[in-house]
Length: 111
Image (cartoon, rainbow, N blue to C red):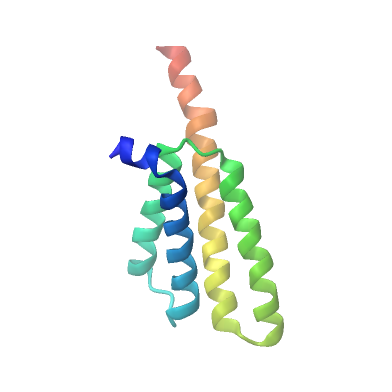
């Protein structure tokens, strides 16, 4: 699986982004059962590709910017879905930063 992911990096990332936008645009409710597989997908991408946390923070800022116009135009449901994804990518970025920049270096120093 690791070889497949390394070989098809652009394909894997684009499938994740397309699935994310399809979820935001076409599904009417925010269902946590639907969000969990996408969240797991992005955690796996972060681990396998060793993505820097700034990518997750960048995606979160992108969703923040995207959530402002629907809110101002009165499309509250769409703005809410975008802000949920913004929050999740902020959490992913913090998780990535915490694990790879704080915990793992301390473990390597001990061992």
